Length: 482
Ligand SMILES: [Zn+2]
Ligand SMILES: [Zn+2]
Image (cartoon, rainbow, N blue to C red; front, side, top):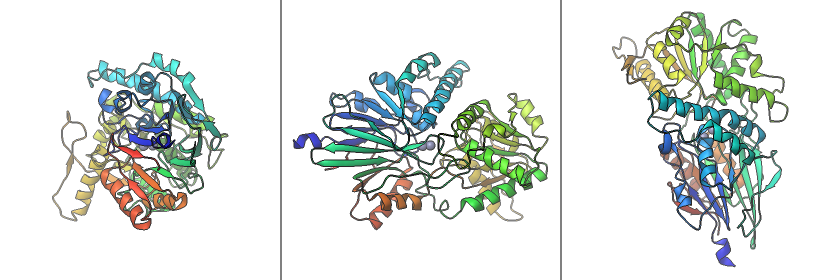
């Protein structure tokens, strides 16, 4: 019998050195499960995909089920490709995540085609809008904390899953697995992206009870010592004051956001600031179509998906359509306004990048960063440039520059740049607290830059020398339990 249990292991299929494509393979006694099917947001076409060949090229590996933790691109962007690669899979998620996928995946297909047509990418689209419709019958939705079956057709032991509210964005969930082996139950918890603390719309995460055997944990903020120092309340006040100062002096504010999650949370804060008089109630708020479509899913699900205030609706916050034409953006910037637009990391060819190009050279405007930006992203480079300028002191001649768009070349950074801690991710002390609570025998660290995972690994080993900690590279096998 022992050979049966020896076959349970984990393999990361996406890159693990950066916040890339989240996609992990579990082989559990004859059942194959994918945790997420993401794509790397900074790559295109096949380069953005997790390495599904790590499963496909081996006769002893297959996929029965995909469990999707939440709707961010780095977690769902390769789902249609995974479904085509493993045509018999069933896909499990929460109901809001399914509704978000039905907005986001067609939007991704259209964007890929558009980029190919306009010549900004040479990568052929990975999937079409037309084929996506046929996939949605594979999506099975589950209520939070209700048991569902994940045993594969060749599975030798029963596997049961349960989704737990992950407190990250609408619909986000962690997955708890119970595996009935011949030597007793084995348990695993996959955090997905997780936020332990309440945001403006979404309450903090709920977690299962420990002890468990194996914890597969995200480590996004593992290298960020400041995140745990700021309280959300202080950050909200500071953010409100920044808006008030810039708008009051006639400038405009760009808040680069992920269209899913941060965008809606910022709308909720702006709504609060308008009601309590922090900013003028008639300051226009500009948003783009995709974010509004996602806000609709937030509003529709407010009675059946965890919420701080069921009465709040993103749709009741007045919003203006973002001007499409660059010249119109320039003239719109003449009067104070708030631009809540993607992408959060200000990648090239996105609205936040285009608007930032019109703002950075003017000291009356501000770019206020409100989410995670990886260190090589334009948002992070802009923050560093402003820090260099502001740190240089009076009388300094340094005028740092930034290249937001290579065709435009370097631009002087004169606008205000500030960063606020509104992350939907747990800071690293909260992640350590989760380890304390779940008392796992093993921790597998995923979804964090190298130094973030190193900090987490060192600290888990320091506080819990009895725990085996792994930081696997892409393709490396980690046994789930003995
Ligand atoms: Zn996420
Ligand atoms: Zn993520």
